[in-house]
Length: 363
Image (tube, rainbow, N blue to C red; front, side, top):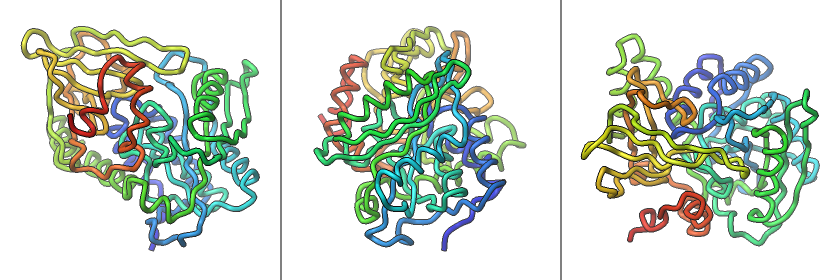
């Protein structure tokens, strides 16, 4: 049986999603807005993929952009609902379920409001357990597909006449950049529904159980909060199976917002032979030690926690701040077909100027 998502689940989803946000993944308050609206207006239901028929349609509810940046974004709950409606109209059939492209501060809750209002189930599957910079990385193996897919985008800053509604059809690799451009024009953050696929495909290509993992982590964090910071950090490590890879004071932050709507750069923690460098593309994609040796790489979970154990986004970091770096190795988390697809890496490697694929697939 499915699980009706209720008010207490909202904070758990936001807190667990914030760890899996890996330095990106939107705004916690945006996630709370989506979650509380959903549970107030209806009964969003979380179901396992096994509760759907093989031929049922499932699409991805997503948000596109880099809202950690100082852009004039505006996204309302109705934008997520409208994006799903536009996709259903273009498909000509109803969606039985929605998955999300990634966990994150708000993205863990992206499907809740459309579920509450329109009825598709929140399917306990994700395109990636953690947040990532490109849509391809959450596209559950569709990145290189020549098949035409439907993608929609809705949202924008109304006061600046930036509101956009967009329905695009084409190969994912060609239409995903169109949605990212729309996100930039809208103010930097836009709601999306994309890539309707049969449940049988989702079952074999998505990272299954990703939403309940975020909820379980959030519940553990909430339970530890009244015991202090070290208890919260311990609970995060114990629940995720992760370790604190590095800790220290941020000595340098060099991250810039690009016209492609990405935050790219590096954050250095500590100094001398204890230093560690985090490589950023919206999220933390890799960690190197003081000698330049790679010690963690996407799709492993890499997250900065404050001294109090609060997950911090890249945008919250500043020089002089003390942080812990959490690492959950990719070997112990469910991995989707999209993070195991070599075609999703060249664009990211080029933008960042570092190697990633060789660490994913073994040198």
